[in-house]
Image (tube, rainbow, N blue to C red; front, top):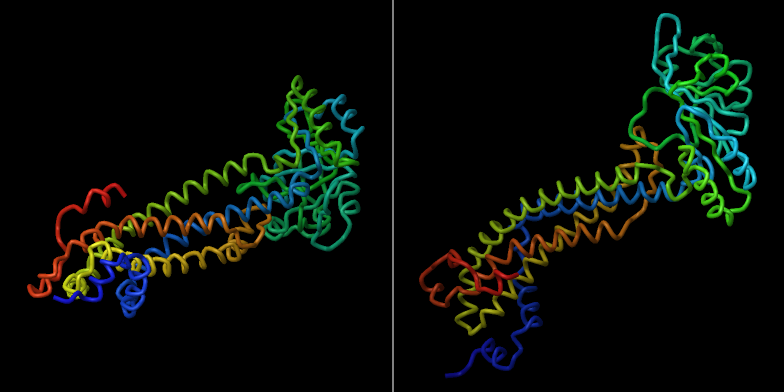
Length: 412
C-alpha cells in the first residue's frame, strides 16, 4: 500500500515546525473572525497592564529628568518646627548659594469668607532653580514687596480676589498683588492641604504666625557651585544632621515617598490587570475548545492522511498563537500611546512632569503576560485535540476528547 504525503514526511522526519507552520498558515484564513471575543479580552488585558507600566515609567522619567527643578536645588535641608541650624547653613554656604523657605497651613479671611490655605514664605533668593510665573507676567520680587501676597488662581476666582484686594492672614492685613501661575519647586504629591499663598519671609513675620511650637516646615535649598562637590556636601551635611533632626535630600531623592507610591500603585494595578487577563483566559480556553470542535473533520482528515499527533498539536498551537499575537499587538499599541492621554488626565492632579515617550520594558512585560496566558489556557484543549482519531471523520463527532491531557502537557 502506497504511503501518503504526510506519512512520507513523518517517516523522513519532516513533520516538524516547518511543515506545521506551512499548514497552519494556509488553514488560519477565516479563523480570526471566530476569535473576536478572545481578541477583545486579550487586547484589553494587555493594554491595561502595559498602560499602567508605561504611565509609571513616564512619571519616573519625569522625576529623574526634572530632579533639580522639583527639589529646588541640588541639596535640600528640611526640618520641622525649628529652622535649619546655623552650623549646617554655614557649612552649606561653603559649597554654593542658599535659599530658605517656610511652609505651613493658615487661615485666609476675605470679607466674610474663610479659606484654609497652604502658606509659603520665601526669601529674596528663591527660587534657585527655575522661575515662578505670575498670572500677569510680572516680576515676583515686586509682587511680594510691601506686605503683598500672590495667591492660587482658582482661589482668586472663587473668592473674587483681584489685584489690590485686602485679606487677613494671622494678625496682618495683606494685599493681593497677583496670582501664581507656576511654582517651580512645588512638592510632588497627589493631594494638597489647600490653595497656595505665597509671601515673603518679612511678611510672614508681620502675620505673627511664625511662633515657637507652630507646625512650620523649614526648607533650606543649596545650589552647588560645582556638581563634583555634591557627594562631599551631602556626606558632610548628613554627618551634622545625625544630631539635630534635619533631613538631607539630594537629587537621588527629589520626590520623597512618591517613588514608593508609584511602585505600590503600579504593582496593585498590574495585579488587577493580570487578574482580568486571567479571567479572560478562561474565555480563551472556551474559545479554543469551541473552535477546535468546528475543526474536528479537518483534524480527523489529517489523521486519515497519516499526520502524527504531534504535528496536529503544532499546527493548531501555531494558529492560536498567531491569533494571540494579533490581540497582544493591538493591546501593546494601545499601551504605547496611553501616556499621551495620561498627560491631560493627570496634569491637574499630579505635579510630576510626565515624560511622553515609548517605554519598551513595560510593553514587553505586558506582551509576555498576554502570550503566556494565551498559551497556558489554550494548552489543555490543544493537547486533547491531538488525541482525535481518524474514525471521528466517519462518526461525525464534533467535540474533542474528554479527560486529562498527557503528563507532559500537565507539567507545562
